[in-house]
Image (tube, rainbow over all chains, first blue to last red):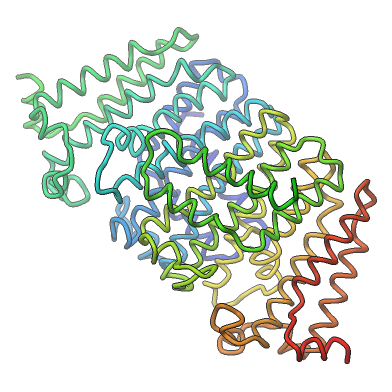
Length: 292
Length: 292
């Protein structure tokens, strides 16, 4: 089973559990619609790779950790797309949940995906209660308040923003959760894995800034140049295109050298390199900037 | 410490945890606003009383179970009040969260309260991982899909409704969670406690139907006669006032006789009787109907 098919299979198990017996059919359909087909599944892929690098001796817990992170991510996208936030009509090439179903069902879909994330870990905790408890605490810490993705989103309602707390919570939190939870699922101390996740999160942010500055709306799949329009902090504004690309390279080198010694270290370095390739924008003008 | 002050103190601990360090201040304030001061705290009171009747040998887990149930309940009220659902301006005598703060902050407050509920149990699980895992599964089961309060709310988006599943999920689920989680926190098998929670939930529903049919808007604190206006199923429409009051008495007698043999059985019967008194409408015409 490839890592990707393992992640999809674990998500399917969660979705099947959510529609057992007599349940409201529209919400059941909306849950599946919000989760499948997915995007790049980058967070659970990182989580799975870290767990495998650490031995993956409790695959049920690893699957639950990957699933939980992706369900929280999908739930946050559904709520971020709501009219009160981004008011987005399209997500992953199809109508957003509130457009395809309704706004009440979009709110409930997000709520239910959060609950399902914790439920997956709760069920897996029957195999190893101590690791399960640790995974619950990690997931809550990087999802809620004061430092999770809810906190990150809430910074956007503040007149004065702690920018470093904002980026760490909004974009970084689930990447840090991914590496820490992958390690915890395999019985390793998550602390040693914080830096890898944080650096991948930073790289993701810089890559997103590059794409926002350089791609047009069609390539991006959403309105371009939004950071400049909304005067949001952006690595390209701060460092220029070549500076931002150098920053991305630096962060990813740092990520690789932060990987703790573990049985699957070499494979994990390869995964980070592949993530880097996937993150780096590939427009011709970027390619020339990279060689400049 | 009275049961009520113990519940408030446990909720305070959760709120303090949610605003540690640098966090977005408006969301921190909104979380407190959504939780304090509370309503009757009926669900955590039931949970605490069941745990005490079972010996309450792990008070930290009991506190976490009570807190988790109340946080989920408060979160569901914040989302139910949103413009897309009830569009309510007032809750517990003050402006609802989306009115007092904003709609984005109301969505995030509900999301964060759900996460905080699971986090409380995750933290308490450090004392007893096996019981913690069980409490996570119980909380998820009665909050999410297919049978929790999210499912209950989602039935309202369906053209054809499974009424029994709807009532069980929408009103009953958190009462059943309350008795089962109280027992589980104290190390007892939750199964024996399902009926007590389900019956208190049914009683709550009938009492609510009576209030909706008999009270005016001022006494009720929200628009009256809504079930008749929306042609929703209501015990008073079905059985008449006296019939509904008899049904309430029957359900509560059944609740008391369902209480499993346990050290605190007598005190628990007293708690159910007090809950019954609190639930039963007290308008003069109801008092005369009760003696009729």
